[in-house]
Length: 342
Image (tube, rainbow, N blue to C red; front, side, top):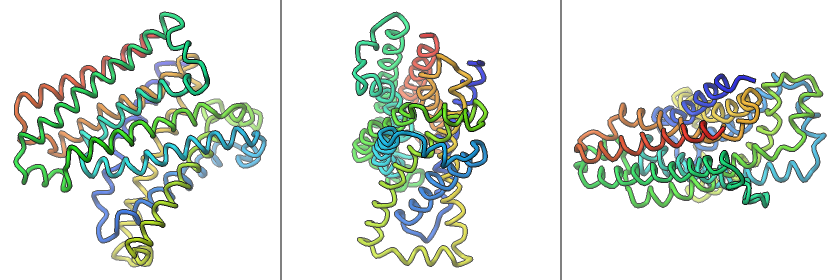
């Protein structure tokens, strides 16, 4: 067990979560629903299955050993994440990378910590001892950080000239973005509960000959497949509504190969954040329960830095920057408290 190594891997996952959307900026000439389907295909099916097949012998045999109840539960929570994941793209569209991921990841981290024990009927465990109370405090501190980042976002909207807002985030709309971020952040917490609902799947992977670090891959495959079902249904419905099925023919045209590449790359980078989480958990031992919080908290910090580099906070005054800085410091403190809980 090496908790420090595990936390570093989780932080790398957070970096992936903070930067996955950047390749979308290179996609041109293809509708949103079409490039999102390509992203979902690569990130939720092709990459996780390829990674699992490369690290777990007889991956489909391992998954087939699990009880149907376990598979359905993992896939169902993946589907819940799928609802939030669809909102994630709109959240970034309206709020930008920095502000959008800061609010979305913060909410996801908080609810992801609370949902598992509540759903399992173990709510009392949240205040069972000093360690549990500190973990709960970290959630409260995280929410406080979200409040400050949200205030910074509203202040940014009030201060920035319209042309600067549109240059950094073409469809910037704080009110719409905040509503979407609430849906995205809360529903996306289903990802962590799905990842923690794999039952004996890690043991089956171990028995098949998988290395300890890779025993969580079968769980990841099932959870992400549940999310994929939701994503592909939505994308195809939007294709029908907007008459954009022709986009897929465009992707075969050399002029649009870039759209296929960049959308697929976004999916692979996105999937890396939860692959990192599952790789890190065995190394963290009894501290594995905070892995999700570290991934999400790291995403907040890195996404805010990315947002600053992309000019999303350009033209804001000292008050707005102070709110943002306070929010980031408080969010960092929430991670530190979660780590100190053990």
